[in-house]
Image 1 (cartoon, rainbow, N blue to C red):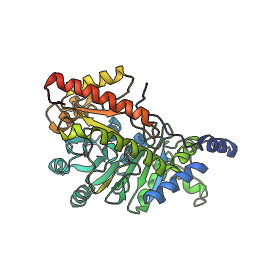
Image 2: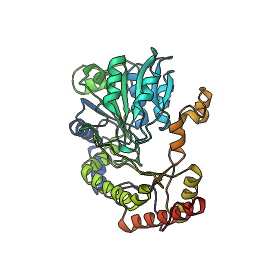
Image 3: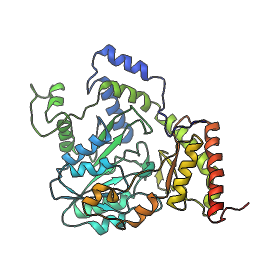
Image 4: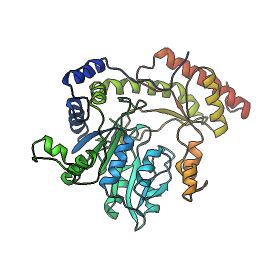
Length: 390
């Protein structure tokens, strides 16, 4: 078999909705389907304002503009994240302060955040890893105590919850991704959410997103002409992409159910290795609901992880690793960070392997992945330490 790492779900309505966009003759941003998607997110995720963007990268950059990050401001974030999280900070001339992660969830550790807050700290950018929420109660308490903004990078967390609240709706601003690798996709896309019914922030989000103009107010008839009123850029996706995404969001629960079935089958079939301490499987705390964005395994060491990846590839199974910690990347080293600064991040990232995970991964395909993973792991452990017995 050839098992891809990811395959985009298709509801069957995508082409019809895209044809409708062409019929309506509004293929640019903020058309009929963009409005449908924005309204869907506001109602489903209980946020004050939701606006589609061209990507989660742009949503994060828009968030940095909205909270008015300035040169010299410090922003605390995990090192174990995608580069877009830190680039949004760097593009404002602000200083990224990397925090370590919780070994159980691989999310940013609130204790590490607490230790890094200074008078120069302006915001905390949290990342909900693998669709499992960060400890938001503790983080929001720190935010309140120190008067800090909290921006949720919920690229992987769409439709997941923490204490009954949807990820992206808990901090001041949330950022979503609808990239091809995400649970709900339009190929390239994202969204920004404004929370706490902050009307001023919501109105400014519209303006900055629309090139710094009040065009949205003009289109609603609230002003007689539109003009340049603030800084901004073009963060609007085509309504064609919104139409594709709307077809996916209509199947939100179906997609989540299919992903959960794959996740739970992997977990059940590999649990005996975890019970014996050979590998570590993902952990979902009781107060959190996952969207089953990914299924990862922590191998005993980096060498074994790399050998497993190579062996699976030879079998046609496209498993992969994940992030190189930002603080040990070339740019992180230029900023003065070095290996050893964040022990948990460095140790865990070197052992992590992600298995193919998508809605529609068939039972025979799952069995092929599980059987090969089991065989390869047994062989690798037997050669190195004899931990795997009968």
